[in-house]
Image 1 (cartoon, chains in turn green, yellow):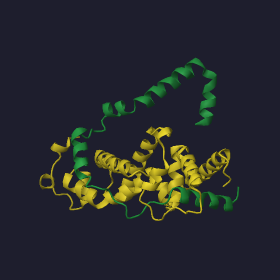
Image 2: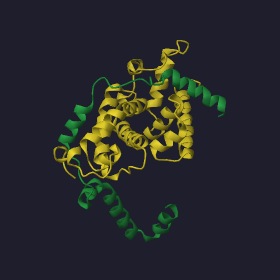
Image 3: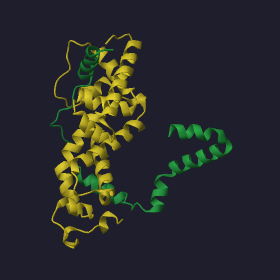
Image 4: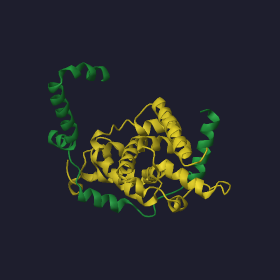
Amino acid sequence: MNPHDDDRIKQLLQQSLPPVDPAAEPSRDLWPAVLRRLDAEPVRSATAPGLLRQNWFDWALLAGLVVFAFSFPATIPVFLYYL
Amino acid sequence: MPARSEIERSDNVPEQSDSVLDRFRRGDLDAFESLFREHQRSVYGWILRIVRDPAAAEDLTVETFWRIHRAHERFESARLFEPWARRIATRAALDWLRARRPASELTDQDVADLPSKSAADPGIAAEIRLKTSQAFARLPPGLRIAAVLSLIEEQPQREVAAALGISVGAVKLRVFRAIRLLRKDLLEQGITP
C-alpha cells in the first residue's frame, strides 16, 4: 500500500459519500425538542447510587474478573502484563 | 440535580459572574438556551458529517444538548464550549452508529438525499459508488468516524482527535486500518481501488 493507493481510496470515498454542505442546518427549531427531552428525562445528579446504576456493566465485568482470578490464579500475571 | 422546571432562571441565580458559560455551569436555563442557539448549527453539522442522515442528525443534536445539560456541573468555564460540545456530540453519534443494524445502512438514495458540497462524479459508475458506500458502512463505527471526518470531510486530524478523545497518532492509525479494511472489502466485491 502506498500514498497513491490511499489517495485513490480517498477519492473513491469522496465520490461515493460526498462531503456534507458546511451550510447544512436543521430543518426546524430544535429547542422545543430539547425542552421536551429535559422534561421527559430530568437531569440526574452524578451521586454514588446514580453512578452505580449507570456503570452496572463495569461492576459486573469487575466481579467476573475477580471470580476468574480466584478460580485461575495462574492467569493473574498474564492480566497484569496486559494492563 | 433538579428537573428543568426546578432549574433557576437567571434572575434567581446569585450574581457570581456575567459570563454565559458561568451561568450555564450553575444550571441557568437561559444561559443554556443562549449556548444552544449559538452552537446548534455547528453541532448539527458535525453530527451530520458523521451519521450522514439529516433526520438522525436532528435527533442526535437534541440528544447531545440533553447530555450537555446533564453534564453542566462538570463543564469548566475556562475552557471553550465548542470542543466540549463536539466531543459529546461525537460520543452520541458513535452510540447511534453502534446501535444501528448493518442491514439498514446507507443506500444509494440516502447518499443522494444528503446535502452535499458537490454532486457525484458521473465518471464513477453508480454501482461502484454504492458498493463503496456499503463497504464503508460495514466498517467498525470507531474506524468509520475517524475515516469520515479525516478522509471525506477533511477535518484537521487534531480536531478529530479532540472530538474522539484520542491522540492524533491514534486517529492516523484508525484511518490506516479503515483504508486497509475498505480495500479488502472492495477487492472481495471485485472492485480494484
